[in-house]
Image 1 (cartoon, rainbow, N blue to C red):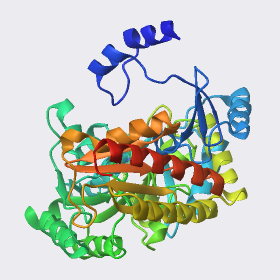
Image 2 (cartoon, rainbow, N blue to C red):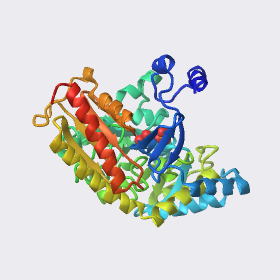
Image 3 (tube, rainbow, N blue to C red):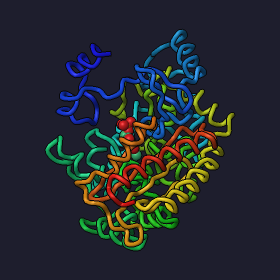
Image 4 (tube, helix red, strand yellow):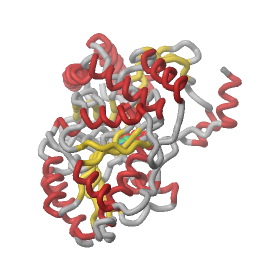
Length: 446
Ligand code: PLP
């Protein structure tokens, strides 16, 4: 263990981490095994994985069926090209499966290895769509403040959390951000969207890209009419509409896709994470029949966009098996039911604890806000790092969770595996209660 920590410090640059802190303290947890909703570390400590790791291990850990699907495919054909006129059965079958479960006219799939690549692919595809229709000036991508779309060049620029732009020095041009409906109302957010579209003229806008629920921004669930209004505005200005379903896809929100909660079907969706429950890196873009037709009819020559691993056979085999399990075990329905149960539990916590503010969930995607005064919604000073303290207290009680501290808000996010049962939700909630109570006492609130 000691040796591993030293080697980790010396050789492993952790993604999204404080490299300084890692150097000083080393890895806090080295995970060894996973089973259901639990993770176990090298010292034998078990944790509830209340975030499905990175919002992705939807069907839970340790599913032998997925390991078998990967092994079987790897023994037969671990990899072959899908470039140009080559293809293979797993990618064809997964594309067909995703087309069959995606609503409406979303029927053709371009594969990637993750969410960032998916959003960058969508951005290039929409610009290409306009270019081949003699509208090359339609380049602008409009997304939302507090939105998160990944860390590749385009997806970072579309991300509406400025900290993410810093590393590259600046964001790319032709990206702009409208107000999120969370801090305002649907009317204000839509007025902001219109204003951003009109700023340089709608004829310069390629697409609007939003998450159905802003995940990394703090599980911000939109007002019921918001997504339909965005779609209406896109139609009015003749702009394409892309939904980033990277977190919200594959059962997370109590529907197969997040958009189904609001009955809205865009021109394109991006997906990743839950498509394989994290057992293999895989993502993609699903485009509408109309866009697919335009691409087929008007693209001249090669579509110069494709990753070596676009449609990786083993990844696709795992994705197929994962979706089969979600369907066979009614996990979308379980996510809906357990999500309501979790939300009810959050509401009880709000009744019993002094520092719980707004609580929310759609399916098993939820959040608990911590505030100094729930009546006025006064936030704690960011210096207190209240959400981080609660995360630490949860950790000590064997729950791995995630804090979002955006501005002065303290948000604890929840996205447990969608196989979770009532007893396990209760255990998670009890530990949350104890953790918040402890921090509340430390703060001198009760
Ligand atoms: N889009 C959303 C909504 C996400 O939450 C994420 C990752 O958290 C991404 C895109 C980027 O996905 P990846 O980390 O697989 O590149």
